View 1 (cartoon, helix red, strand yellow):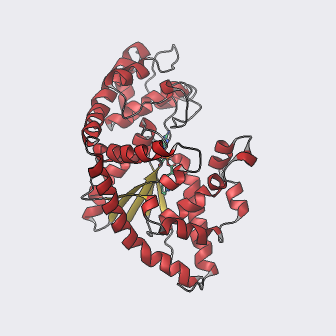
View 2 (cartoon, rainbow, N blue to C red):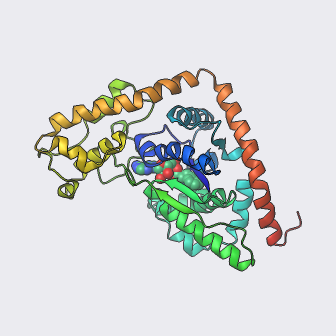
View 3 (cartoon, rainbow, N blue to C red):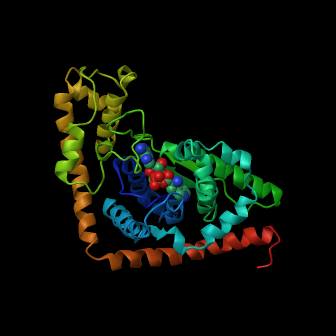
Length: 335
Ligand code: TYM
C-alpha cells in the first residue's frame, strides 16, 4: 500500500483541510507503516501557481504549511514530506499525460467551472490543466490510496480514467488505479458564515474559516459568531436535514472529538446554541491550540523545515524515476 496526498500552499491550513484531509493523513501513518507500506504527503506548490499568488507569499506559505503539517502530527521520520516543485518528474509526467487526457474530460471538472466562474477566457491554462498534473502526482508513485476531502473525488476519478487509457493505448500495466479515501467524519466542512459554501482558503471573509494559526481568542470568537438558527437542537442528525448551519457545527464537533454526531447530540438535545457554541469553542481551542503552539515553535528554524523538504524530495525523486522512465519508453521516447 502506498498512501499519497497533497495540499496547496495558497493560504493558511484551515479546519476544512484539517478535518477533511490532514487528520486522516496523520492517522494512516502508523497502520500503513505497520503493513510495510509508505505514506507520502506533499505541498502542491505547482498547483498553487494556477491562480495568482505573490512569489514571496508562495515561499513563506510553503514553509509555513510544512510546519503546520508536522505540528499536526505528520512525522518526517515516518512519512516522506516534500514540495512538488523539487521533483521535476511531476511536471514531466503531466506533459505526457496531457496527450492522454481528453478536452471533453477536463470540460466536465466542476472545480475548474467553480474557480473560473464567468471569466473562463481569462482563467490560466494551468487552472484548466490542474487535474492532469494531479493525475501525474498520484500515478508517478503508483499510489494505491489517496485521502482527500469530497471536493477532490472527481479529480481522482479522472486520474483513474487517464491511467486506464494510458495502460490500454500503450499496452502496459504501468499505472496502478488509485482509490480515493474520502473522510467519513468530515467530507465537506462548510463556511461558518454561509453553510452553502465550503470552507475555503480563498474565501475573503476571515470569519468564514478557522485557521490553524488563529489564536485561542480568535478561534473561540469565530465559533461564537458562527451563523446558526434560533431553534433548539434535536436528538438526531437526520432531524437537521434542513438546517445546514447546525449540521455543519455538529459535524465539526463530532470530527474534532472523534465521536458520532448522534452521540454528541445526545448531550445537547433540547438545548440551544447558547450552550452548544461555547462548548464547541472550548473543544476547538483544546484540539487546535497545541498544534498552533508547536507550529510557532517549529517556525523559529525555517532552515530546518526546508531541510526536511529537501530530504523528502530526494526520496520522492528516487521513487518517481522508474515510473517516469516507464511512461517515456512506453510512449517510444528516446531517453
Ligand atoms: P487543497 O489545498 O485545496 O486542499 C487540501 C485537502 O483539504 C481538503 N479540503 C476539505 N475537506 C473538507 N472540507 C473542506 N471545506 C475542505 N477544503 C479542502 C481537500 O479535499 C484536500 O484533500 N487538489 C488538491 C491538492 C493536490 C492533491 C494532489 C491531492 C494536488 N495534487 C494529489 C491528492 C493527490 C487540493 O485540493 O488541495
